[in-house]
Length: 37
Image (cartoon, rainbow, N blue to C red; front, side, top):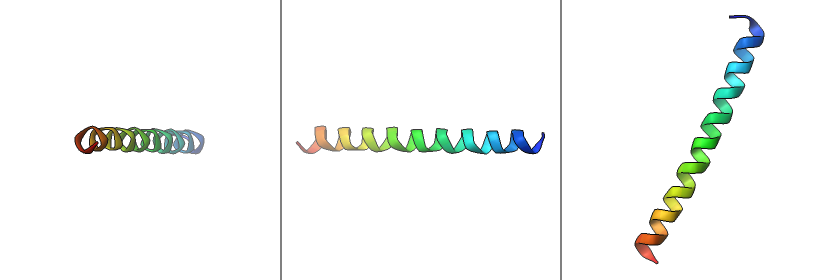
């Protein structure tokens, strides 16, 4: 791997992790609301 590829990979991983985090937060809110509301 070149240095550039490593940076691209880290950036991509960061984006995916952020995206999954947002999705899980959204689903947590949705399930919590459907459970409580």
